[in-house]
Amino acid sequence: MGKSRGARRARGAVEAVVEQVDGGLAELIPDRERARAWTLLIDGAPQSHVDLDDPAHLSFEYQRRLGHVIDLAAPAGKPVHAVHLGGGAFTLARYVAATRPRSTQQVVERDATLVQLVRRELPLDPNARIRVRSADAREGLAKVPEGWADLVIADVFSGARTPGHLTSTEFLDEVRRALRPGGIYAANLADGPPLAHLRGQIATAAARFAQLALVADPAVLRGKRFGNAVLVACDLPLPVAELTRRAASDPHPGRVEHGRALTDFTGGAAPVADAAAVASPAPPPSVFR
Image (tube, rainbow, N blue to C red):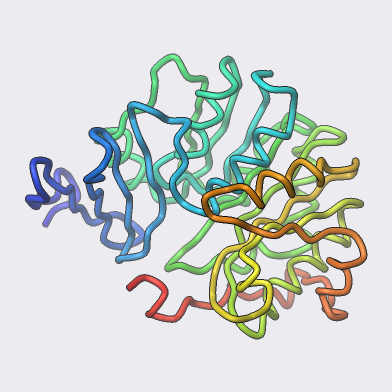
């Protein structure tokens, strides 16, 4: 199968789109319950879900939690400047455009072939102010003007693992440079028992930001299973009470940790520097079955 049009496989009335991209085998699978909705998988790992008719609909658990952060990052409907590190199918950029019209956004996605596939099959609203840059996340972030962003969202996975150079204090220095004073950083993290990566990422963020919160399934926080956790960081107080309420009432209920409880959760883990940074752990095969 080529890199141009790839292959189409029958999946009910609508065909799946299967194409080789830089990061592996991409599959766009039609949603059986939503007429113009699709799930993007890379090498079998679910990456994004997009509903072209309702871009404010978020299906994946971690994307819903990042959606709560987006909702609380500014007064309802107020346009924001947002940077998305990791594009996938641009789900969260579409969400910001739908819920905060006139927002200006930059998406940094290293996989240029994936960007072409998504633009072709799941086109962006031409009126949305979304610029997509095909570059490494850290290199693309370095080109964001200082103090430009109200919100920086990191959701970068290569082979289902976050690259090591996006886990360090030096990386967070670049995030802080791009954020306006009081801007919010949110990251999708993935880990399983014994949660060493997650604890290290919390300690790293605590070394650069005054306020932190973590949203995750309680089973993940207890080290019972591999899963996602959303880390939120800012220099100003975070809307913890409202975030807690939204996480608890979500179809995928989550728990919010912050303050002393979150500090205790790190178990004395040290911040991660570039020199010692490694990729996040690979998920067990059972995660995607």
